[in-house]
Length: 312
Image (cartoon, rainbow, N blue to C red):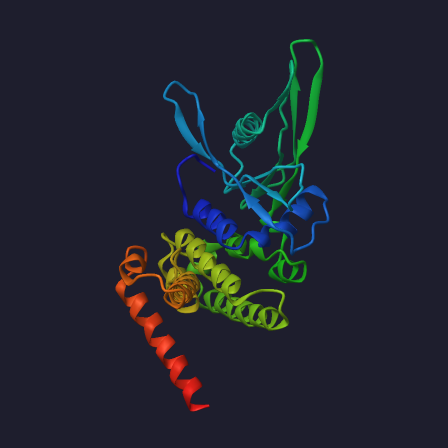
């Protein structure tokens, strides 16, 4: 993609950040690996300065590893259309990642290039894997292939059945929007497709393979992508709003998760204050670390527990 942020960049990076494990099946397909979907995905810095006369800062779409002891970094770029320059940017980002992870021992320095891949949202018959060849000054060469995935090759059923849920928000690229905008029937077909998708995602959640949070994140990113693609197709956009609900990056699931995290923090703070009171820590010292409402709630719970013991 271009260096400026686009809605597709946002959707890709947001899903990777909020639901990191969903990228694992994508890695398995791109790089012929066999990671478990329960492995930990470790995200790293994805902002690098590329010198072009103005020290412009570029943001990669991803920079991560999988598992505690992985020796590989992974780098996947999400590209909206083949433009002939993506492979140069891929190599630029790969070298920056290699520099950031360089290891020097004595007089030797190892630069480890990441495993790079490209997700093409649009593609044609000439969109193929690309080989990068690096020629060293001693006459030796290093060549490696950058694998690709084309959204056009994946139906929703294939995404669902193969656990490639990370790709679902980008399925909307497979619709012919000009034809759909001129046909109420095609708009209704699109709406029926997504109604069926929401139902199937609910079934996957009930099976325990996908969390409610992850489902809501996928739906929100579907909306983000579809809304951006239909800016000049008013009839289609109306259908999108009816079926997807107008959620964007600050989706309800994220708000629920943040509220839950705040509740958990408050609960932990109350327990800490209860312990401090029980050990005779002076009130002024407790209030120097915790707010008055936390102290009052902790005191209230201690009194409640004490009353319950007396009644037994």
